[in-house]
Amino acid sequence: MVDFEHSGSAGRAQPPRQLPVPVQLALSEDAWIDVIQRMDEVYADLVRYQVDLEDKNVALEDAQRFIESVLSAMSDVLLVAGVDGRIQQVNNALLRLLGTTREALIGRRLADLFGSASIDVATGLPLAVRHAAILDCELELVTDAGVAVPIALNCTARLDSDGTLSGVVITGRPLGELRQAYSALRDAHDKLKTAQQQLLQSEKMASLGRLVAGVAHELNNPISFVFANMHSLRRYGTRLQTYLNALHSGADSAALAQARHTLRIDETLADLDPLIDGSLEGAQRVSEIVQNLRRYATPQRQSADAVALGKVVRSSLSWVERGLRRKPRVSLALDDALEVWNYEGHLQQILINLIQNAVDAMDGIDDAHLEISAQADGGGACVCVRDHGPGIAEADLIRIFDPFFTTEEVGKGTGLGLYVSYGLATEQCGGSLQARNHPQGGAEFTLNLPQRVGHV
Ligand SMILES: Nc1ncnc2c1ncn2[C@@H]1O[C@H](COP(=O)(O)OP(=O)(O)OP(=O)(O)O)[C@@H](O)[C@H]1O
Ligand SMILES: [Mg+2]
Image (tube, rainbow, N blue to C red; front, top):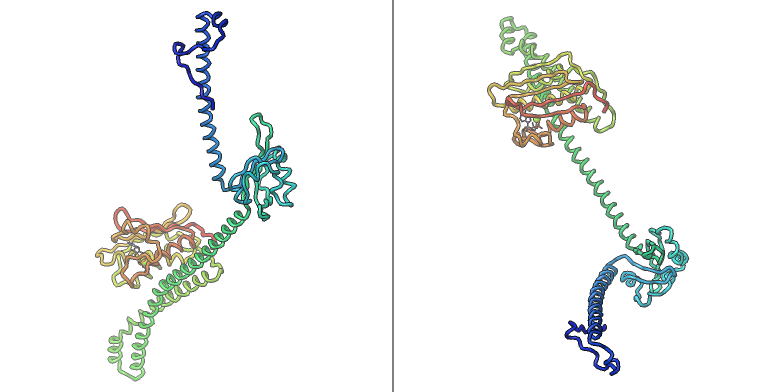
């Protein structure tokens, strides 16, 4: 670089010392000053140009370094060729892939880098991009060692500042990597599918387990009731047999009257019908549950029927009351004409669970009071079961319908009653079941039913 020496001001500049004598004589002092001033201006301009040039050089070097760092950081290969098809620029990724040097590539024909199957396409690339970019074009590059590497290329035109085509820019990625990524993706997808199937299977097993537990729970009530009745019937049978034996052995009327009184024959006879009715109802209940189980096990469809809700409420209540030593005070507000088209067995099962829970919640309360209403509501019906117990703890409200949630002591409640009831109300009966604490105390469960359930 030329180093210009700035003379500073006109006062410090020295006139040239070797001017020929005749010229020296011809120049006046003013002319000398003028010349010196002009030289000063030229020097000042030169210094400015030099500073500008140095700044631009620095900026150019920065830009160059930036472009080089980007090119060498790229993992995709990059290749720039002119319209004549000669290589102008490449990046490190391409050099690594081909196992060659930059010097060996610059100026070579682009087509020379490709395998025989790709030469024609590669030769036409610099002109083909004139009309449109070429995307995802699969060609084969050949490495220095002669190995063909399939590569997915994108080719775009490089234009001058005036918009004329000056070459082609090619970027690409070896297909091996893509294929590897694709096969890794497929493996991950397969694993995910297997995991999903296992999850589905274990969920099925879990719900089967819950179903079996629910069925066992629901069967337990009627079966123990039938058992108890059968024991009573056997006792009654023995009494009647004893009385008949006394009758046939010719005992006198006083002895017979005494035996009749002692054996409580009249009470026994009066108790026979309710016992048999109760046992029949229990057997009926068991048969319904078995039918439900069969419906779960096989896809056969159960048909809905017209159900008198008042009747179902009364029968459910009597079911629960039979197992109680102390009955609660019950207020019923039932519309006896109210009918819905639904599954009577399911509705009874739900109501028995709700009433049993209400009674359980009021266990030990002196004035246990149960209120049940069944009324028309919108297009359907609404059954409310409200107790005057302690209500449900706020934190428990969101989980009382979860399977196995119970606050009963171990061995008493299974925590399936509400879970099963909720499933029946929503999935089978097409309705909803909600729980809340009544503002005046106690818990209130509301069963909403449509006028007509769709087939399940
Ligand atoms: N009327 C109610 N008042 C207060 N808590 C209730 C009432 N009904 C249900 N719960 C709460 O919800 C829990 C779950 O009830 P759910 O009927 O599902 O099971 P459970 O009654 O405990 O046992 P089971 O499986 O024998 O019915 C109960 O343990 C109780 O804590
Ligand atoms: Mg319960």
